[in-house]
Image 1 (cartoon, one colour):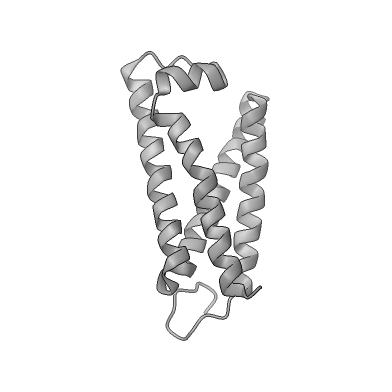
Image 2 (cartoon, one colour):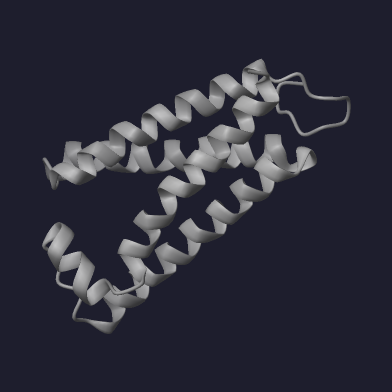
Length: 138
């Protein structure tokens, strides 16, 4: 499998995996959040925050799909994926330290985020980008 194919497949898998998580947070938060995590989403502010998170997640998933389809967006999409996943994982690690153990599903999310960040970083490193493309190691 070529590096290009690996990158495209990885971005597609990440987008497909993030989409149901986004929807579980914001589509019907009054139903899904209590059922999944025991979070009371009755308040308008809570629903508002989770719907904003859903919007952020879906926007990134769309960008990753565009990166899978358009070569000029592939490396920026991979970089955004790595930064996003590392940010989530580091925030969850901080919460583990400060707050203790969360719901088991959230721990699984953290492990997946670390794994996706690592794979994304590896794919960036392995890429052979044309001159003038977006890379931070130049």
